[in-house]
Image 1: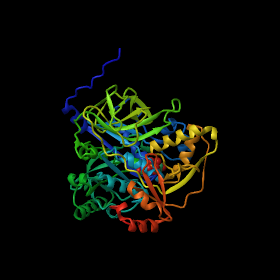
Image 2: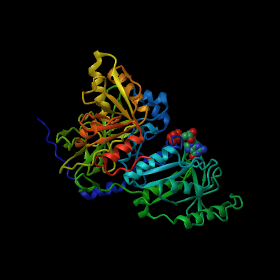
Image 3: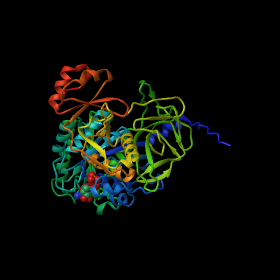
Image 4: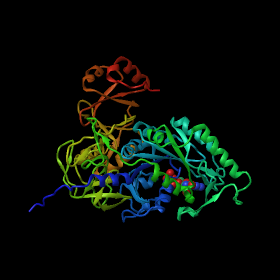
Length: 535
Ligand code: GDP
């Protein structure tokens, strides 16, 4: 007899309380700023919420790599995204991992749609780096609050005020000091809180294996500080406050201020103050707006949306995982769910909490948590699933690709695998697949934001789908824009512009250069509304 599955009746105040405990965020940084080190250092302060390993370092990653992970290992990059969950105080932190490589900025963007704020990690010696700026721009587009963390303060680096200027210039947000380093970069003695006479004196510990020893002491009378060090720190913090003001939570949440904290993550210094700050000041999940503008409150019945689909995570099973962020209500394994886009039921029996690369049967998840749906075929990036009253959240915006190459299947006998593989990569958003009006007899066009995506795509077609493929030389285009259906006949005759089509039929126009794009936009302004000319 089929078991009757009844949606659990959950006390809305319990859902609100669980949501209020959640801090769901991502760390954005240029490679080597110390993201892995900071993550490990945070995990040292955590109490385990789930049993699976909480460590997240490169060593533990390497140990659990899946087969297409070999590519990651060979290239020394992190391509996939997972969520790390840990308890701190009364809070539950969900730290979502973002790929470090610039070629995967679209992936990173998707992860950022699933968090409530971001931590922007800077290297004290390098300040705002290229990739940090790019990732910040994504946060800006998404309206995310951003906490700035200046890392590697144990190494020589810029003056704090120089770093503040760089942050303001690059982000337009006003940096305000939550704490201030005692000792210049390279001589990290501890952290003061602006306006207080004491400071948190820290002693670095080796390689982040232990929590730092920290004690609160009077700054002015601490004999361990060299002459002038305390005075300089107090002055620095005072000047920063006079210039930029003090931390204001509303301004932080509105994205006009970015609170700044200092760390030496490798020595675990400043990590606990960072966690305390996130615990007390960072936002918890709030209701999310649906496509019709109505907000699905966190205590409404369950809803979530797919921010990432990834295959090949478990070489033994060749499975595919759809990562779902819980937007409202409670998720229980086995509950009845619907896929909003198709109206079809979704199996929740095989859902897992995502913890590092490991998995754990998902029992109960709350707003802000990430649940992995294994082999829930039909779930695509940007899709909504729900229980109870229907809701559809806005889909995932696509990045405009900048590189285009025809892909050819070299073994006709493997045509099925080739077609299946392309469909899978397209569904995951790993790469875009375009065809011409004739269905591309020469081969479909792979469209990417970064070159590394081509490498990953061809490698995955080979390893996962047994398809040996060859890529033609890059097509002579470096920009693309979606075209509304009525505009297709208008653009069809324009020389130098090529029209291709996505699997869902949407047309995309390819342009050889900025000049051609701008010129086309001048001629057909109605086809490209609200878009500034590209510089
Ligand atoms: P990621 O690429 O951003 O994940 O950076 P990692 O965490 O792998 O760190 C890059 C390098 O910087 C490693 O050699 C770390 O040991 C080092 N590192 C990270 N944090 C600190 C720090 O606070 N102080 C110093 N001196 N080195 C650090």
